Image (cartoon, rainbow over all chains, first blue to last red; front, side, top):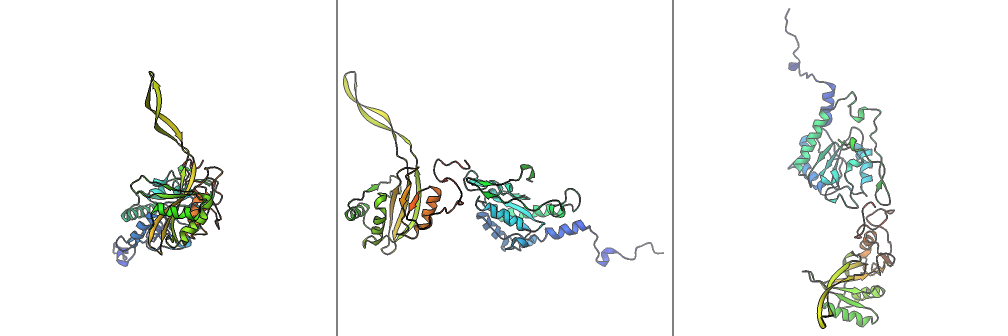
Length: 197
Length: 185
């Protein structure tokens, strides 16, 4: 009897992996962003998608004009109080699994307009943000760095257990309450600070 | 282009009852303007647009200014008797400036290639006498800009075809560009 196995997996083109790794590998390398921009950060986002910086190298070049086809919301720019309900509504319309990048100082906290009458003090008041990219505006390299950080985060997700992502948790809702216009400010429930990443 | 005093004289000749005042500008831009009284503003605007030598056919910019009441301290020379001798002494006097809202129009002439002419309109105060005549019937380009001033400063433009808020939502209360506005209050 020959003690050597008859079939060598690597020679036969077989790779052994886990479902979890394969699933996460597929998701992290085909993130389709929602095609919308809010302010000057959007110009940097557009630059990141063009040939010089080429976000296609990371599988995220397919900017979708419909939230139904998008996996990733890049909040690129100042979120005004008048625009915030629409941004939350677009996020609600995206199918799971979905991720949010807050790009630039304005999307993170309101930036230089924080104390103004018209600017939201961070989109994370209303939707959960996965990656924060500081800068005013961040350069395209910073956006690519943020995208790579998001890919690492996706690659590390467990598909089972209490830490599983919301789309695999039947009890978790991907819908967030849309703020409404009040007499002086937006009204409606805000996310607790603890829910922020 | 005619000089500002010449334009002022044309206006006062055409509208004897109108009060027109030249507001000097001490800043480096040195761009004086004409203050019109609200009652005659519409006819004067029509005149500025149609007068063959002026023909200001284009209102490029309309903006608002909030002038809250403030106390100005000035040195005033007062005659006083000190030790039996009359002397001129400088004293610090306080004076309150009137409070009002202002609409500023920048006019150009496309036909004659001159401008800008800056005209100003002032409201009676900042609370209940905040109406001004709308110049949208004279220059169509004022429509959105007057809506913006109504939204952010609270000037009521009488005769405006569609006076609604432009930037803030409809049930918003207050006028955020006023100097005493506190966000969220």
